[in-house]
Image (tube, rainbow, N blue to C red; front, side, top):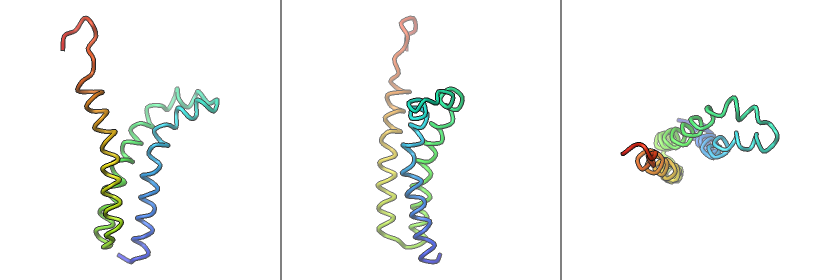
Length: 107
């Protein structure tokens, strides 16, 4: 892979990963700006899109950095993967595994 091309791909994947929080909060931002229709009609799209971005961008970036022999970029993408893992595991642990049961049900 050409050095300049690898650097451009690494930069694009880094910016793509950085957009994940914006994607996650886009419905709330649109609602605060006076566009409640965005939140009402397309709210279900933004969460999965942010999740895919948070997972796929560091993985793809690590592979590109590995192929382009960019040691610093590999470390950066490993840190991105670790940062992305924390909220995902937090949601899985507290939102799915330790979810409170309604009063009528026994877990």
